[in-house]
Amino acid sequence: MFPEFFFHKAKEVLSFLHIMKGKVTGNDEVRKEGVNEALDAMDEERQVYLNEKREAQGKRDSDTGRDVSAI
Image (cartoon, rainbow, N blue to C red; front, side, top):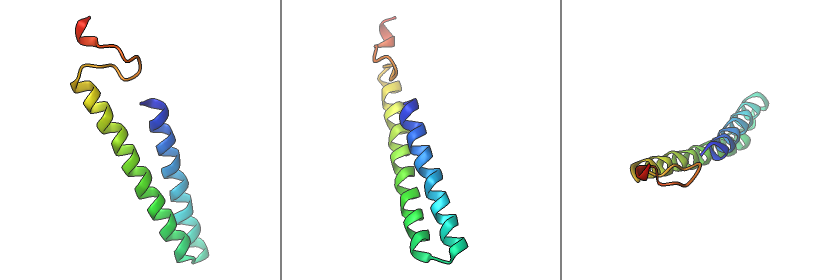
């Protein structure tokens, strides 16, 4: 989960910078692209969390792939 989480968070931050660039330059197209990129990154990040939740409910450790219920 951890590498994926930071990858999506970095995409979200980059998208925020695009939004700010569009605001500063007055370019609404850049702002809209930044917003769409941020929303996509947030959707992807949500999927990472949902996968983590599913794995936790199945008692599997996502980092090792082991079934921790047997321990």
